[in-house]
Length: 361
Image (cartoon, rainbow, N blue to C red; front, side, top):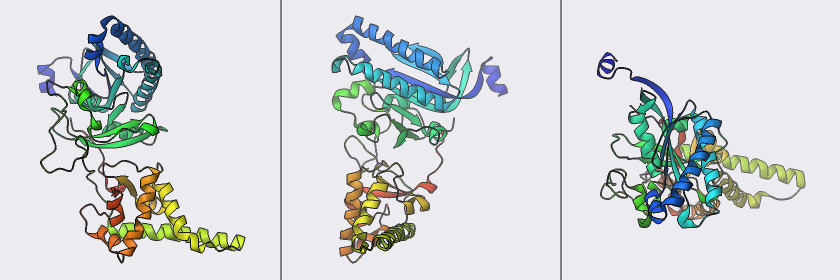
């Protein structure tokens, strides 16, 4: 610290929430109509200023079409971002597609340097990089920020993988705020189209934020990376199965006793429907899996929709018809997948074994 004070008098450090926002396709909008674009930007600045005040955010600066602000609370920062995006979407829905002024927002909790009310350092850079790869009209936050809001807000979040971003040595765990469950963001660099890549340029490197995946890496669309695990093993899955099957049996026998009907023949169907409903819910797990700290996800670590969840469980019939070989595959396959998991492009992850996300400054 002595060396820092000698080199930069007046510079201090603090932990804060950095909020970075930027207009998508601003250059294109200015080329089409400078006057209308400047007017729209002023309106957007007014909107963001109102919500910043409401959530006690501090505006640091507007640089052209980019906003940098800070919050004492990550919760307030995320709530502010959600309200800004919803307000701007309502305004944009009244405009032609080529006149929309959409924002991307990046949020990071990190250690920064403070000099005359300005913020500097890697904590700021991470927020800016996350903003640059956020979905259009969306919010992307770092793992450090997500850890502070995961149990405090009635919002859904999608894990977008560990992102390699320019000039940041470590990969950054990234989480997208689900503003509309019907249009969930796609994982891993958001499947940017060729037409939109000019919006993502950084330091003259179009369409690229970090190093490309290594040769032979699994890809889907525009470089979707397989979720790295940790994966739930065969024996934990087996215990979860016993718990879930036992619950279904108890319900079936109870209904039989109460009604005098015979519900036992319907147990396999009830079991599949039960699993499909729970595994496509926000739990992403049946009761048995929840107890064992297991979640069901797709190959990019996202929640399954109801159709994929049901398809995965109906596919267990094939795992049975192979003399249970399809289940045993989970014991030695690379990602602990059974045959039915592979058919549905699904995996079971060990939630308890996930590392706590962090970014070293």
